[in-house]
Length: 146
Image 1 (cartoon, helix red, strand yellow):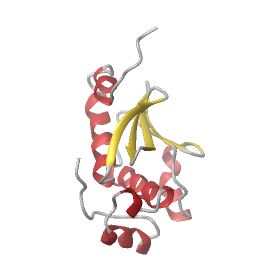
Image 2 (cartoon, helix red, strand yellow; image 1 turned 60 degrees about the vertical axis):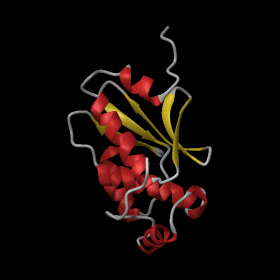
Image 3 (cartoon, one colour; image 1 turned 180 degrees about the vertical axis):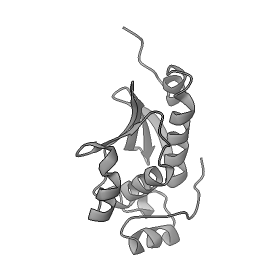
Image 4 (cartoon, helix red, strand yellow; image 1 turned 30 degrees about the vertical axis):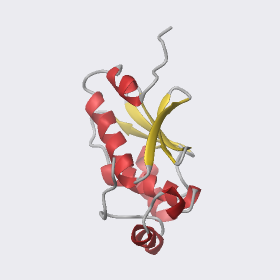
């Protein structure tokens, strides 16, 4: 049995070379959407945290990249997620297809807004207002710090 990874860098480095840039992109996209983001390995999965709380995990599989758990979404966003939905709180982005960066960022920002109330997790007031005005969906906007 392989030794479990201790860091996200180690996890990504253990994945196939063609998948590594995709995992880095998912990681960067989530971190950009969550200004106070941290990182850990939780249950063996790369996990983005905020103020010590697990927010989103991602993982490489044979045919897809998984992202979980999902926040609650409105009907319109649920329709956008439908092609990627694998379970109630999981999406799978098939390898060989473009990653939906905007969707990943929106899921991360929505998680922040729902789980800890935005500002408690380092989100500035203007960004929280944009999320509230769009029903939790942010298009474009500010990039966070890494």
